[in-house]
Each structure stands twice: as C-alpha cells, then as structure tokens.
Amino acid sequence: MAMMRAIGLMSGTSLDGVDIALIETDGETVRVERGHNNYLAPLGPTGYRGYSEDEKALLRAATKDAESVVRPDDRPGRLPEAEDFVTRAHAEAVEQFLADNGLTAADIDVIGFHGQTVIHRPDHRISIQIGDGQALASRLGIAVVSDLRRADIEAGGQGAPLVPVFHKALAEAAGMDGPFGILNIGGVANATLVDSRGGVIAFDTGPGNSLIDEWMQEREGKNLDDGGRTAARGRPDEQLLAWLLTHPFFFRKPPKSLDRNWFSHKLAGQLSTEDGAATLTAFTARAVARALDHAPEIPTRWIVAGGGARNGELVRLLNYHLRAEITTADAIGWSSAYLEAQAFAYLAVRSMQGLPITFPATTGVREPISGGVLARP
Image: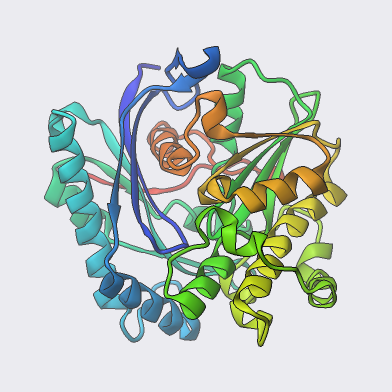
C-alpha cells in the first residue's frame, strides 16, 4: 500500500488541550528516520493548542453532565455546547498547524480525530467522544476519521485502549524484542505488554495524571504537580493506598478499561497538599505495578510516554515498583507528548484501508475489527 500523510488529533482526559502530529504510514508500517541516540523515530512535525481556563471549565461541566447519559447519542446539559467547542478548537488547531509548517489541505490525506471523551462505560455499551467529524472535514477540506471506539463497543469490546497496534508498529520499526511494556500515562494510564514471542496484551492500568492534576487544581490552583515536586515533599497514606488497591477493577483480568470518574481526587480527603499528592502519585505507580499480575511475561524494560513521563516522582516510583529498566519515550527518540496523536493518525489510515484497529487481546472484542466513521469534505 502507498504511504499516506495523516494528521492525528488527541484531546485527553487531562483536559489540557489538543495534541497534533503528522506521520506517514500505509496503515501497517510507519515511516521513520534514525534520530536521537540512533533510535528510529516517526517522521513529522507536532503541535499543540492549549485550552483556556474557561474552556476547561466547559469541558469539566460537560463531563459531569454526561453522567446522566443512557444512550450513545444522548447530549444532555452543556454537551452540545461543548461538542461545538471541541470541533471548533480542533479545526483552529489544524489550521494553525498547517500554516506553521507550510502545508495546505491538499498535502494531507486524512485526519484521525479522537474527540473529547466525556464518558466511558463499555459494560453499558457507551463510550462518547464529543466532536463532529463531518463538520471538521467540511471546514478543513480534508477527510476525517472519527468515532473510532464505537464499532468495538458495539461488538462487545471495551473500546479501549486503541493505541497498542501503533505501539507494536513502532516497536517493530525500532527492532525491539520482548518482553517489554509501553506505558502511556495520560489522564488514565494504559499498558501494552509484548512478550518474547511477539504476543500483545493491553489494558488500562488505573488512574494516570487525572487525580493528581485535580488535587493540585483544588489545593493550589495549578494544572499539575510540576515534575512531581509536591508529591516528593509528601508522604503517602499507606492505609488509604491499601484500600484503594482493593477496588474490583484491579482484580479483573484484561482486557479492561477504566472510566476516569471511577476514582476521585477527593479520596485524599483531609491530607495535606503534599501528602495528598504523594498518595495519589503512589496510587498511579502501584496500579501500574499491579499490571504485572496479568503479564504473560514480566517485562524487563518499560517505555513511558504521556504527561506522566515528565513527572519525576512518578517515574522514580515506577522504577522502584516495576524493578525493570525504565526509559521515557523521548529518550529513545519517540515522543512522550505526542505518541497518542501519532497513534490516531495511524488508526485513521488503518480505518480507511479496512484494517483492524482493535483485537481480542487489547479490547476483548470477539475478533479483530476495523472501526471509525469516514467523513469527506
């Protein structure tokens, strides 16, 4: 198959902004170049469009309103307003990205548009990512693939995680052998585990950055614990941690996925700011360690991506609990910040080619299936 130029767009559950990435792929292989530390890295520029505090407040309100959803097409409360905003913000992000990189709509074959997750309840066959793919395609003059989770959900899968097939393509391009893990720490954390025979399983491990970010926002009006410095000054509440890790989610066999609303930063209650941050950071790390309960082989190496890769205290705790080599995606020439955006570009091309994007070992769907809705300008 011919290589296609695809843009991926990702707005995660951390509600911080839109990540944008351009890659070249035929839906199976990814065009790479030898870069930092002689590792192979995906080609293509990246970009970012941050959300203002008012925009974040709208998305938080929409996420709360989504709790009353009973059908996939329900849009109660402020969800219609938020959906219009998400579509507009992503359009603005792409327009600026094209201008910044000397590109036009004619240079791009397809956009992978994740949208903004407002609720994820796969056991009720519901996972809603707001954003209008057709409106985005019409405004930009570029084909758009969106709604990438629905087909899997309707076929009985978890609808998440979606990125493992891209993780595997990157690992193969880099010549990596198992057993290893790729850990993406966004609002929710998910792991892709590759064994020494090339077999793959994937699942959400538990909360990622979301509880820490919400705690810092409530206590200090900050969007995150920069570098994990606040957590590093605190002491985790071991009794609370032990109780949190008895949640039924951690005992379920994968594939499995998590709605970020299953846990709340308010669990840290009356702890000091530092001790609360330490407890929630330790919770994320120990939840990842619980992934080893389900690993076919214990990974000897982990590659960490997502916003959590910039949290020094979290990475330190992962080193301690996983007892393996921990490397950030940036350190091997990949992109910690834009790996998911790149993945949605890759998934869009796979969708256009009719190739599977979800698998029994990643989402629990009965057989490998494609997904996504194609909108043409």
